[in-house]
Image (cartoon, rainbow, N blue to C red; front, side):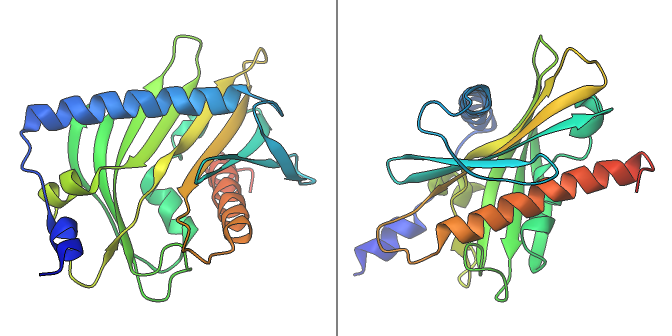
Length: 234
């Protein structure tokens, strides 16, 4: 018997309350991780990779096998509440790769916490090809006006219990990622930070720097353009 296939097929039957508690605490941790990533400038190992003419700054740091990318931009005449209306996991995934096959909400766990399925097809980029992601999405407003959208994969056993994995799909892992939108002293401006973490295994032969910088640029540019379109500036 192939023990690896048995391990991969394991799933946990979990009660609604246990699921709620797990996702609640996991997403709280994700929110705090995103806030810490957004609060550091070039310290704590962050290395600036490039700065674009429009002010978008891309930086990166390593933490073990994790490659953590951060994109930041100052948006004027935009409040955190206005910007966050177009920041969500499904619309972001549509911009990661045009070969997104399916993106749907599986269930709402709390008013600001949902579970989502993202599925990519055979023609997707290497990071997403024939992969699906079962993720939670948490939207949190802080006392100082900062808004956070936290997204990460569920553990594979819990994900399998909620939605069995199709035979022709690979369950991808999205580590704690998301958006932090900070209100500035100028009430009509905000600082937007997008953080993406990818766990690269030793056997992976993916040009992680090229693909992820491209991904971050596409996602970040999408949100700026979508918002500008919403308010009639483009």
